[in-house]
Image (cartoon, rainbow, N blue to C red; front, top):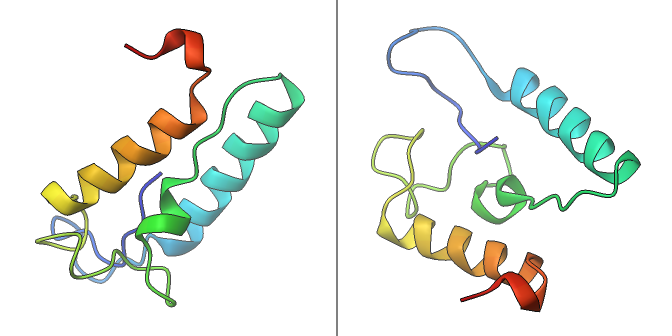
Length: 84
């Protein structure tokens, strides 16, 4: 899951603990099942676990720069024979 410190549709809710739990589960599931896990969160989050302001217009969704980082990470994680 991508980082976020705010969901504008749910004022007062801090999604960071839930995001951390889901990401930890996804990572462990991927490792246990031989799947590729791409950690977008680490690359897009600020030190507080929120979406870096230069990568998101609203703190929840990536902008073009954020998507470019995600594309690079995904491309690096995919086996060479699956890249086009």
